[in-house]
Image (tube, rainbow, N blue to C red; front, top):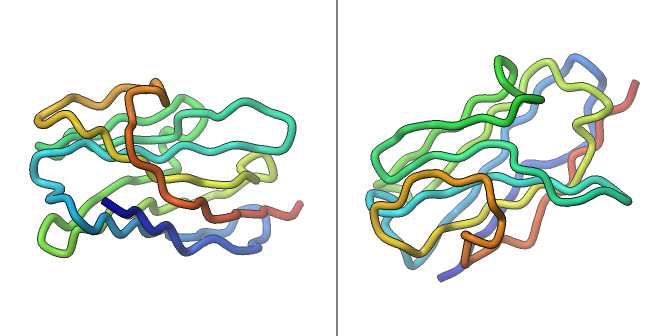
Length: 124
């Protein structure tokens, strides 16, 4: 299983970015995928997750601004990030829970496969 995250970059405050995660080797129809982020000097933080059935969960800091979605056939998970703030600056990781038909959890230890991360920088 390989997860490949992409789409990060530099954006001004209030701008938008869309992150993509390609999950080769797993069908997303039966696995949950999350996005986590880690800012310099801070702990890894849950951002959003989508279950095998398409149920979505968001961290409090991104609710109403970020939207997670997936394309099972293409094995892609997306994170649309709008109204970005400087505090959203972090490396963003996608991660897959290898237990079939699992719900979204916010605990990083529940996720078995991780992408390499993509850097999002939001300037003020």
